[in-house]
Each structure stands twice: as C-alpha cells, then as structure tokens.
Image (cartoon, rainbow, N blue to C red; front, side, top):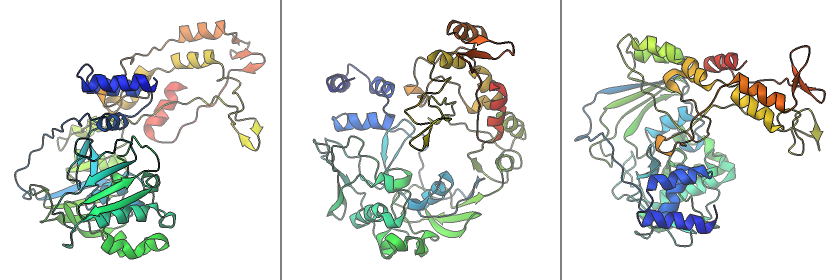
Length: 445
C-alpha cells in the first residue's frame, strides 16, 4: 500500500464509504497496530470512537475492602521502574497517565481534559507536535495541585539516561515538552510522528509529582523515599507496602472523579504460585480477584465447581507461537551465529516450512492445552475480535505434509528419517518451562 492508497482509504472513512473498523482491519493486514491506525484517523480529522463503559457509578465509597491476589508480588511503586505487570498494576492504584486505551483501541482521557485532535487544535498538521490540555482541579494525595510542571518533569526524569527508567523508550523520541500554561503542555517531535500517543499514555505514561521527585532525577533516582511510599493522583492513597508481599491503599476522598472509586480500601497480595492463587479466589473465597493465572483450564474448571467464584477470560492480542530459525545456528559469520548471511539447511526450504505448518495440530493444542484460555490461529493478528483476520482457518494433515516432502525431494531413508542431499530432516524443538507449554511440547513431538 503506497501513500496515495492510504490517503484514499482515510478519505473513504471520512466520507462514510468505509467503516472505521474496516479501515483498522486493512491497516492490521499491512502490519500496523490498532492504536496506530486510530492515530492516523485522528490526525486526519476522524474523531475517536465514543467509549461506552457499562459501569455507571453514582457515588464513591461504600464498597468495603477489595482484596486482590497476584501470584507474582510487586517490588517497586514507581511506574518508571515498573518491571512487568506485577509492578504496573500496583503502581496504577496510586498513579495515573494523561490517557489510556480501552479494549477496542480507543484513547480515553484520564488526567487529560480531552484527547488531542485536529478539531480541538491538539494535533499539528505537520505531525511535529501535539498539545495536551490537562484536567483542572486534580490534586496529588498530599493536597498539592497537579500542573503542567509535573508533566514536563516526567519527560525530563524518564528521558535522563542516568535515571535508568524502564519507561525511557516512550520518551526518548520526544524532542521537548513545553509548558504553555498551568494546564497545557506541548510535545515537540524531531520528525513527523503519526503515533504520538506513547509518552504520558498507559502504564509507562503514569505521572509522578515533581515536588517529591525533583531532587531525585538522574543518578539519585533510586534514593527517592516516594519510590516505596507513593503520592499520586490516583483513586487510592498509600497505606502500606511490603516489597515482594503486600500493597495496601485507602480511598482518596478528593479524587478527581467524584463517583469513584467504589471500594473503600484495596489490598494487593503477592507471592505463592498460580494454582494457589486460583484456589484462594475460586475455591476458598479468601480473595476477591486473582490476576494472570497461568493455570491449565481443566484445573480452573474444577476449582470453579466450588462455587466461590468464576473465571473471567479476556483474550488479548498476545500470542504464543512456534518460530522456525531460517538462519544456520551452526555456522559463524564475523563472530555471530545464526547470522542473517546464512541459511538454515532445513528451514530455508519453503516446502519444509509448509509441511511443518501442516503437522501442527492447532485444534488439539486449543482443546487439550488451553481450553477456554486460548484461541488457536494461524495468524499473528488475532484480537480484538473485530480486527481478527478473516483468513482464520488452518489445516492439520500428515498425509499432505508427506506429499509435500516427497515432491520436494526429502526421501525417507532406512531409518525412517527423511534426507535430502545428505542432510537429515531432524531438528530441536525448544520451549520455556511451565505446565501448558510442556503439554504443548508433547503434542508437537
């Protein structure tokens, strides 16, 4: 797809001849992400799709305690140092970004007053800048106002290599962040940037207060007391934190969304193992919610029979897949193994790859390994469902695989192993270790 084709697709959306959903599907087909496609439409004057959240609270508080269980425990409460979901989830109780993504790939304002667009003057026509307007009246948990100075500081903080922030990737391509007034900031990019909604958005976009972290930028970043005692703008105020064990918070009475949060207190407990975490929610009812339970579906089904809870399965865009190394790991080029200058003696043959594709029983992988927890697909692009490729069929056929290999000259020898030009068709299947993957290995083997 060239630039002219792309402009034509966007024009069709603006004129109503092409739906937003169909446009995003076409962009996914050429390798873009759903958020990136949404950014392209927004930059071209097509408004973000309206968000419809089923939860409609009428007042804050009254929900009592909420007990969450993560079998991997959080270790830090600074979002710029959050290593993995365990830390990000804990930080999100206390800190917030300017905006986040809903499940359909639309931007949702959080600390921002609105999502930047061409209509509201937020997006520059040349793609070199974006203006964020901040929500007025937002307070930090210690009562100080949240302002543009905090936003500018977070860019300086994360972008400083000596800070060693894991979030630096979201900020390093921003040339500057300028304060226009107390509630407005301008991000300037070194080149046209279609995907401008990275800095200050989602998990790595959570904002920390300048007045508490200003003296701890750069090499002193790990010394900040607030790394372990957060003061944010989020729905909950800090109560207690035992690294590698528990995090506790209480409702922030001055939260900027007057009807939230519902629960009066929240506790995140970490540690143990995935099966124990599932049992504590589904069987004993000791906890209200457990997350990231990498537990086989047959075990979850048995635990659900206890009647204390149920499993909510949210299919994401994440995938587990089998990758074939088309370079040769046994040959060294300029000190590098598996160099792109080499070809694998087996997998560089496309007919071998076709045969292997037919020999993976995806239907059985889904049925006997993942159950409800995974959908077998031959494609990398599998969720959200409205973006899923229509070409979602797959075939398992030992007979066809044998026919392909026979036709390609891979003949069976006396040992039963196929060979071609003296090369045996033998390879190693390697996987990381957990229950589902071990079963997966057995099926493929």
